[in-house]
Length: 313
Ligand SMILES: [Zn+2]
Image 1: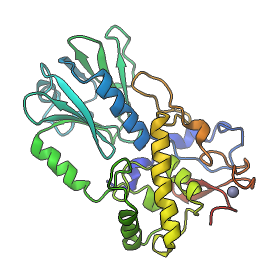
Image 2: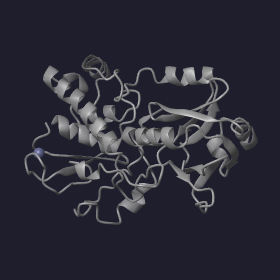
Image 3: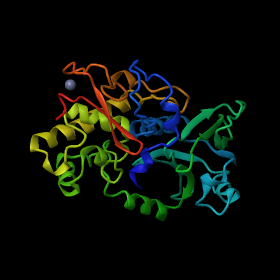
Image 4: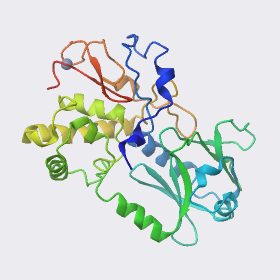
């Protein structure tokens, strides 16, 4: 999928209205609306594994037909889930997979740019933005909200899951052993692009969007527009280490909830990584490394990068 996956049109109008978190007034640059990136998806995977795996599906209600577009119709999607037990949750890049009993099928959740999952008591009122509800025989229901145009749910058989994995073979998952210095280096050399567009390209590294791309670049002391093939060996090592450390720390703190429509976890709580953000949405504030005021710059139609003009070079 293209990098548009991480660019949400929804936020452009809203985001210009208010003062950004941290107090610096906007400078007329609409920020991208943060979307679920890898740490948020991994947080959901962890929660699903703990709170949903092992439950049997009693009923499925699809309120927006477009989210099950791979199926003939809503009923066909529901029929493949009702009566089945959900197994362990796993992740394929930014896709969430819930195994199904009897065979190698899985329920695949693509959150798109805005999607959320919520585990609730069945008696809780159903939010207007709810796209689908899976009710369990015991223990509440799982709701998918705001999947938008890009998000979707589908049941995939074993062969389809293999195809999905194959399509993502090139992307490095930063939470796996695939994130080696050598793999990062080889891709930087062959892609020959600016660092930020490359970092947010899901065919390069899985699940990095605007928030963590800027944080990784700050941690590596590299400017967003550096060309990937011109980094020194030492710079490649810094970038590699930063991808690993930023993503792991964000997973440990259960993701970031920033912006006008912050991401929420399976229970509706915010992530705790926001205070760790060193550049994202902090333009005008002093750099935590060198005290220089941070700046933001438009890098594309709806894309903004935040960085330190002094210590990132
Ligand atoms: Zn600095």
